[in-house]
Image (spheres, rainbow, N blue to C red):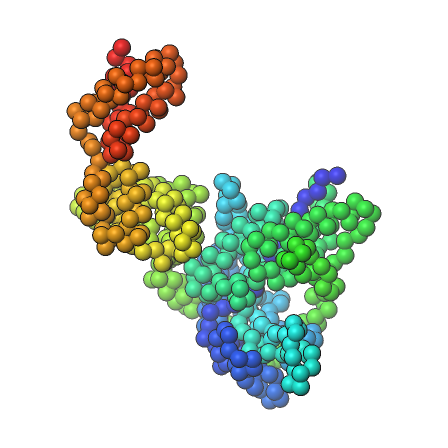
Length: 502
């Protein structure tokens, strides 16, 4: 039987605020246990929560970025359950009326553009942390330690509709959301520190069946690679269970990366098990249109929304949609791209000329960013913000390609020298020092072509017999004679003209 996979993601995004969502305690990571938890976090009698305005503004940013509805009035509720690291025995969250409702996220899976709708994004507080692994108590005994530093850390839980149909699609969605929250500055995206944690809901159903299968929730997956592996394992497990006559049960599971498998953690609760009810200590959260407009204005001042920039790259700069999506993968990458293009256009006073040349220039910049620059950054394990070849320097290099001073191939050698800091990273100085100026003299190129044709008569005969590969072989010999410095287009044009004369 053929099965369809159904996936929905719940992403816990830790908001980049200085203090917790309902108290003034610090959210700084890595402090000694229980040094960043005050009376409110520990739920001491008589304490009252106070809403963190910055956390609300972060939620508004996310809502605006995904085209969601920002609720003018939302409610905080108590989600009741017992964990040793949850001092109140309930979590303050949002249930019936979340702050962000709807919206969507568009991304590419390979070369296919995909849009996944969002159900909601709601504000809540994080729980503390139980330390089980070989934790030693004050008297040397094996114990479980409770660290309340994380208690009350602000989270924005972003819930997708169950519209994903493959592990690859889920990973692409998670990566896009990860990039978005970092672009917006609402989360640092550090998955190792738990700032971006994904719960994966997976079920399978026979192809053609409308009803969803029974889902399993895989909790707190903290890497994109593990998301893919966990989904693939869980899909295999559910299908094998069904085909062996078993029944999938609704439960919460954990992914064990060492064994590359999911394992049962506990039965999965439904909403009624948590006995949600409005928190009597917190008034409704009221968000005015003026507040939303203020946040929107601040976002535009800081560079706008990634989706708006993606459309501009396609419509104004002529970039292919799939390339535009890659260029806005981070704010730093998008800024770098625009800075290079602007530097290339800075010398043009004629607006009409700028507009006419923009698509070709933008395409050249995009190719370099997604090609040589990204490859070198990956090899050196750096991001674009750490690139030693600044945007003005890359623009200076690309100008020499555009004015035929060097070829694109030679430019890669110059780029490597710039990366290494030769000649203070200045492309013109490197070109001069290494004697890399391109040969554009048609007379000199014709002389080299004549010599190659004379020395390789057999290859010439193959070409004239209809073997097109022979042409490339002759081009290679000419470029070898020119030490790679002959203008490639001129070589091709002049060689073809000479060969077609006979």
